[in-house]
Length: 75
Image 1 (cartoon, helix red, strand yellow):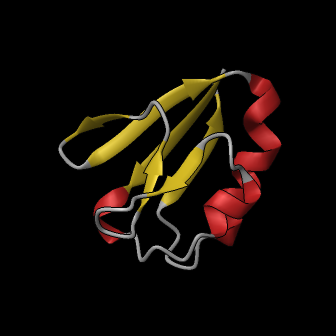
Image 2: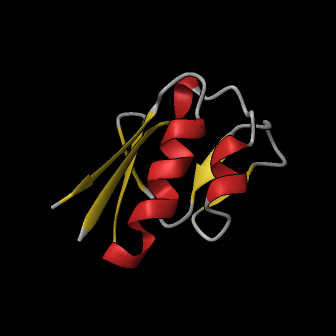
Image 3: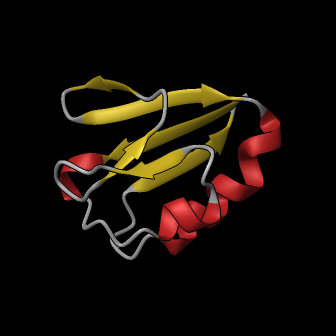
């Protein structure tokens, strides 16, 4: 399994994560920040567990993030 952690409150909406992993990330039409699809929120931090086949594209999403608020790790 792969854990993705996203600190949405610091998101600047650059869209880099969406370009790298469009099946896991979307830009909100409400506030322009990105959303982690199926992410569960706890105290402003979103997390989701995904299959290992999503690992490489979400690592690219994390690397594309200019404010470095996406963490991806293999469990």
